[in-house]
Image (cartoon, rainbow, N blue to C red; front, side, top):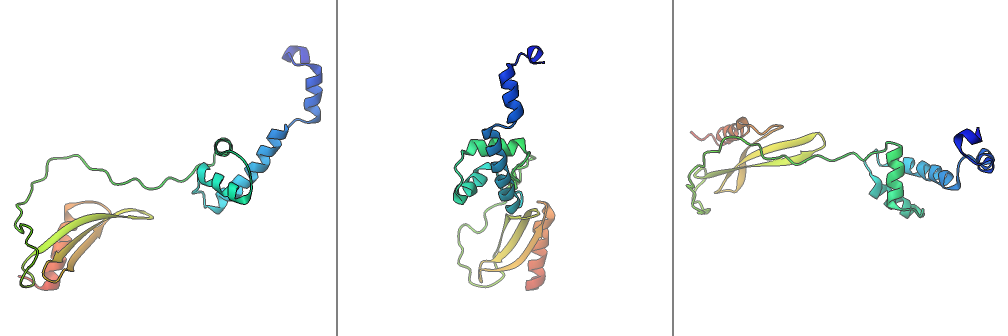
Length: 167
């Protein structure tokens, strides 16, 4: 069998006595620690953070070794959410600037301004539209939806009209 496999007999018998090398045994011990730190993180940490945890624990190993062991054991970091990207479509109609940077208003319900922003949550992105009265600087209407659609602004405006009972 050694002749067919082109292996020296002494090497074959040495392998029979000790089939796993010292490096392999050390990798198995290190993999146990990696699995425990990975489980403690809830499956969120990747090799850089696991490596940092191992260093704090007192283990001396390289980040590439941790990455290799995690890759061999199919331990992967959970990725975060991606930022919402610009959706291509027809160009929006730009409304005329009626405020002209004159933000000091003399009475309520004279000038309302609106804005849209997005908020990252555990379940994904939420879009928030608000309507602010420039006289009191209070939010008079708002709407939140999981998709960026025209209704989010209309709902915020309707809420402002209903709350201020503006004709």
